[in-house]
Length: 123
Image (cartoon, rainbow, N blue to C red; front, side, top):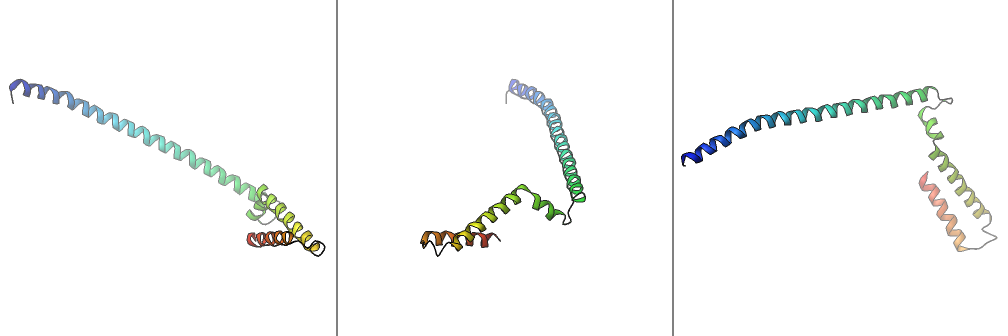
């Protein structure tokens, strides 16, 4: 290798070496920042979970009816809607049953049977 090439290579490696050390410091700093952000995020999530846990415990303690969590679930709007739908389907079945002799319709009979099957499946 000619002398000026070797000199150029040596100069180049001197220039690269400090950059690598500096790059390692930068990467370490970035890694530390990411780890700190993750730790902060986890701490916030843990505080939120503890808050939710306390709210549920408070709701269960103050529940006017006995039954605990099942009593709260019964008051849930979705459960209330499901109950009303179930009652409406049951009423439709009863009407179809009571009028089946007056209206001899295969379609109404199939509708009654399908509604009955749905209620049985969901219970």
